[in-house]
Image (cartoon, rainbow, N blue to C red; front, side, top):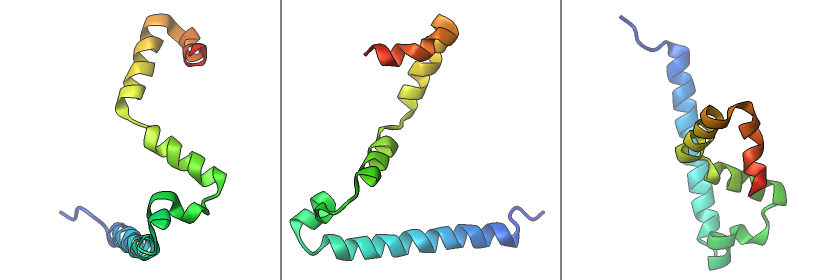
Length: 84
């Protein structure tokens, strides 16, 4: 029984290679100075900072909380986050 097709394996391999290359490039860039490491060289556009914050703030506890208040309050719970 074949679990993964050749296309699946190629996609996974391409993903892994891409992530490794990005990591090596960014490691070289971060080694230049402390500002490059901690602040991205102070050259990151605002929309990438927002995307980074959004991806870093996503976790399962927030999802569980939203599902819980949806169960308790119904569809009007969609407005509760705006109350804070």
